[in-house]
Image (cartoon, rainbow, N blue to C red):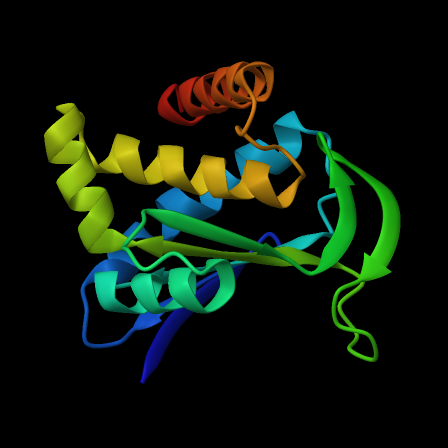
Amino acid sequence: MIDSKFQDQVLVSCQSDTDWKDYFDLIINSVNHTKKYEKIDKNYRIDVYLVDNSEIKDLNYKFLNNNYETDVLSFNFYEGWKDGSLEKSESLFPGEKSEEGIGEIYISIPKIKSQAKENSVSFAKELSTMAIHGALHLLGYNHEEILEEKIMFSKTEKILNKVISE
């Protein structure tokens, strides 16, 4: 069974046998602040799935050939997002109707809990940071190069401050 909440074009889902639905509003707020900060049309949809370490490890291996757990994974529906704008609109899934969907974010709740403890920050702050981070990846931001990393992490902090200040 799945629990989910859809609000303002953000869908958040998790297994019903967890207490993770308590985090839905924080994630929706974080993703929507990211869309607003990046001036993304509010009609673009982002789906967020809260998963365990086993599921995120499987996804990480299946799609990225990395055999380890990670905190967040983002998968675009379209090629063409670069630094917050859609340069071209080529569907990664020809024949499927997803014009208004940007992509999917998978967040490992157990991994976020352990990272929050390691980083001496609240779970809510770490979760919000990873939701923002995942949304920025969907919008074409990366951190493979030093300059890209500075830009992406700076944006993450600015958006996080807006989320926290509410």
